Length: 108
Length: 112
Image 1 (cartoon, each protein chain N blue to C red):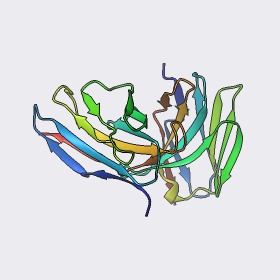
Image 2 (cartoon, each protein chain N blue to C red):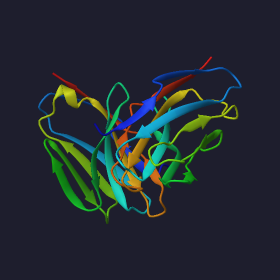
Image 3 (cartoon, rainbow over the protein chains, first blue to last red):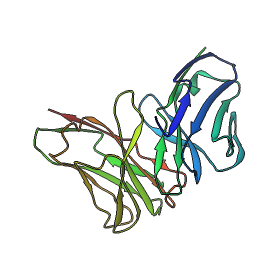
């Protein structure tokens, strides 16, 4: 069993839809990261959070420490949001644990 | 411009050959990381370094070696002991270990 599980694995949405990607983890946590990987392979860090909620533009990330769960929301989705979204946990033991990613396609 | 660079973009290795992938950052970050990504798979940590002259093995360090002689540089050598080296290799850095990471553009390694 992976230490970090993401769902869904694949997601197709119409432009403008509200999107939610989920991440559950089983390890202790110092921080949780959401990353975005574009089709060319480049990776951008979207959020780092250890509690509560963060918002950046149309992206919102939340974390529930008690339930060991985080969500990434995209409001008013756009084709340029099409990418793979990766959840990663940095543990107190100085280890990174990565989910296998959620592949998002937004159709115009 | 501050950033993190990797070279080359594509690298070809012959059987039994060692190759070195370059990673340089001018962000003044203490921590640097090397990841491997196989098609359709997630990121896997090879090595990371929290500070100059120190580095730690990740999940898949066998067949790889690193050095951290300078803060700016964290080269990865793929040795002949790595039997399946064809993959996409990503380097990243962060102010401190576990903080927000900045990724390089990656190097695709192919075995001839």
